[in-house]
Each structure stands twice: as C-alpha cells, then as structure tokens.
Image 1 (cartoon, rainbow, N blue to C red):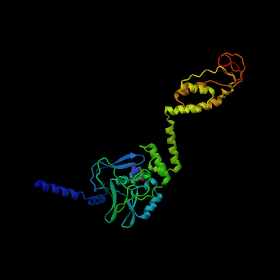
Image 2: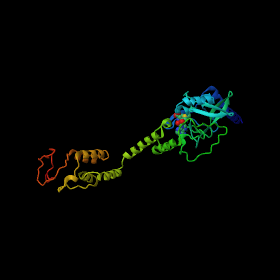
Image 3: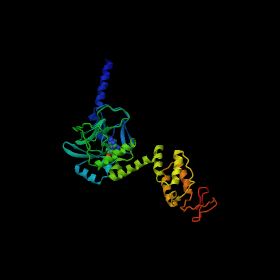
Image 4: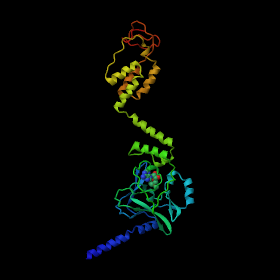
Length: 347
Ligand SMILES: C[S@@+](CC[C@H](N)C(=O)[O-])C[C@H]1O[C@@H](n2cnc3c(N)ncnc32)[C@H](O)[C@@H]1O
C-alpha cells in the first residue's frame, strides 16, 4: 500500500514536471537550451546538425528556435542585405493571422537554429506557442527519440533544394497548428536541383559542395565541376580500358610504333624491317613523332612509356633509299645523324 502511494506520487510529480508546454515556456523565458543535445558536423553538404544524447519521449518539448522576432518589413529589409548563407536562418511564419519572422542568422550558440530538415521521417515538429504575448517557435518530439539520433523536423512544403528528386516517397504534410519554414530565401531553381542530384549520385556518401556554394554557383559552374569529377573517374583506367586505348592509338602511329605497341600488348615480337624499299611511309618527321609520342605517353602504362621513350631517343629522318651497303659507323649525309646497320640497305 505504502509502495503504491509513493509510486503514484512520484509518477504524478514526474508528469507535472514534464508538461511539455510548461517546460517550453520556461525555456523560452530563460533563453536557455535543454540538456541532452549536442552539435555534430555531418558533412559539407548538410553542415552541422543537432543530435540527442539522451532518450526523449514522444510529445516532450525539445528546443526553441531562438532569434530576433521581427516584422514582415524588417524581414524583407534583412533579406535584401543578407547573403544566402544567412537567409536560410530566417524562419517566416504566421501567428494569429499575422506575419512574423524569427531571424536566427546571428550565431548565439543556441541549438534550435541548427536543426536540419527531414520531410520523410522527422522526429519532431515546430509549433508556435505564446509566451508573454509573443510567439515563440518550439520543437516537440513526435515520436520517441533515442540517444545518437539526429533531431529533425519538416521545414514545410517549399521546394528546398536538397530535397530535389531525393525524396521518392512524398509524405502528406498538413501544416495545421505547426509552423513551417518558407522557401524564397534560397535562390536555386530546378536546373540547379537537377545538377545537385547528379552530384549526389556521383559522389554517393560524401558530397563535395556546401549548400552555400551551390546556392552561389551558376548552373554552368555546377556542371563544369561535375564534368571535372566525371573525367577524373575516367582517367583511372582498368587494364581493359588501357588495352582499348592502345588499340585506338595504334592506327594513328607510324609503322615503327605499331610494332612497339604490338610487342607490349600482344607479346608478339615484330620482325625488324629488313626489306626496305621505300622508307617514306615508315617514318615521319621527328617533330611529328614527338608530338604523337607526347600525347600518347600520358595515356600509356609504364611499360608502354618505356617503349615509346626508346623510340623518342632515336632520331629518325626521311631520306631516299639507294642500294648501297652502309655500316653502323656511317653518318647520314644530310643530318649527320647515326644510321642503323643491317636495317638499311643504304642511303
Ligand atoms: C537552419 S540551417 C540548419 C543548420 C545547418 N545545417 C548548418 O550547419 O548551419 C538550414 C540549412 O541547413 C542545410 N540543411 C538542412 N536540412 C538539410 C537536409 N535535409 N539536407 C541537406 N541540407 C540540409 C541547408 O543548407 C539549409 O539551408
């Protein structure tokens, strides 16, 4: 009996203590955040977020979205002078039919301003409550929250850029008595959203841009950056790709280089051209060769680079062939360069 009385009293006390609305009012009046949360950096794209370090029951008050409570006119004035990165902290809402805005652009160390959006599975909801005759924006848990969970709420039905095409299942959102953020501060159009989605698809886990960067980038700049990342991917070739490249390049090489590639690629030793009737086809001017080789070198594997290097070292000139035996000690009569014994019938 005694045990029952003690328990029911303690339960009543606990229930009284945790009346969500009363608690919210107390925190609003004292401009303080509740314990049990921490700020964590999530990634460059999402920035920071607020995470729970304790367990929270469904319905409890969590945090206030603190900032300057300003009128429509003041809100418009600030939006004209604010950078996009600051505009996202302006929470516009209606209270008793009147427009208000809580401007949380100034970092006052409060947590509510750092809570991110989730339109699919949020764990809390923003509500306007009256404290001393003024509206305050407060977050309440809509389900139980475990330690380590990110605190999120639905910013509302605006076309928030990070939601583009990512949300496959759109949940029905009924504003009712809850406050929702208004879009309009972020100047991204649907084309940017498309680009953003591709960036997300490409990089999967780590997204490389902060939203602010994306907000300020033009569409073509976004695409340029994407193009860079795509070509970077391609430059890392698999061996198969490398072989394909070599085959392609072969057709563009002089006969001599084709031999070289053949040797490395297909393990087929090419015969030295012993019968040379007209050398014109087999050799091109050194500058041409050098140009080709420079181009191809960067795309070849180390093995192939050696091969090309060897060819670069040789000085090849174009001459008319005459039938006269020469030795390797002979020099070319035109350029005074060395000639290769056995390979030549004569100059
Ligand atoms: C009020 S701030 C929230 C705190 C912000 N993450 C930060 O680090 O300062 C709103 C901004 O957070 C980012 N954000 C909020 N929810 C997001 C989400 N679900 N995905 C990606 N970014 C989000 C957007 O850049 C948005 O403009």
